[in-house]
Length: 124
Length: 151
Image 1 (cartoon, each protein chain N blue to C red):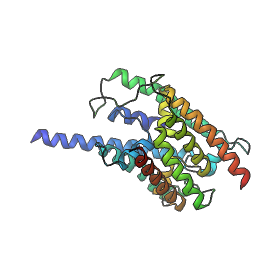
Image 2: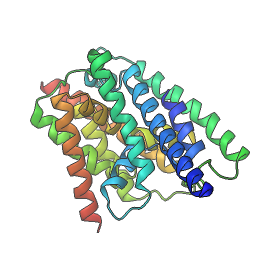
Image 3: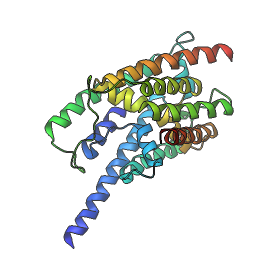
Image 4: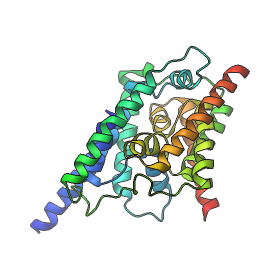
């Protein structure tokens, strides 16, 4: 489904389905072409709203305290904009296009992600 | 008059399809378990009870895109609702620089810490979960901070 959604966005709008890029561009008021981005994010939000009703257990509880979740969110927001992508843009679309930038990015965020999960798991 | 009406209808169709792509993407994240931080951290923490299922989710999405993207781009000179494909150069064409490495490293730390990446974070927030809302608000703040620092 994730792959099909990314292919649909490329076919219809010629765009890469990168969530951090789409979200970041909407935040930057200077960017034109916000309509399709807002529509895409609207679909993502709709999926969350439907899940709340249909399958609330599919949205898992947090495994960390709220302050830690906030720190994680800031790091994810800052890092994905600095690095030009996240799990979708680099991880799925970029790797599929065999982009050297994306392959390097995925290698780096997998290493720091695994290291952080191990350390945080050992500390908690 | 006719042209204006069909133009508006065309724009509506374009936005509906972008929304459909977002909804399908979000449903995929939910069905595959990416919106469950415990699953994500169980995948990343290879020393614990390692759960490799998310690797298959990623691999199958990559495989579909690896087949579909070239198929679309070789058969069509432009997408349905735009004059060109906005796709960065693939292969070795891109520049490997410090922001790419540092940004990916910071993102990985945040992902390993909270068990959420941007898409699942937005879906979790939309579902009304308090950690999801906190994560998404903090993520937006982090993005805004990066935009300010880059200016």
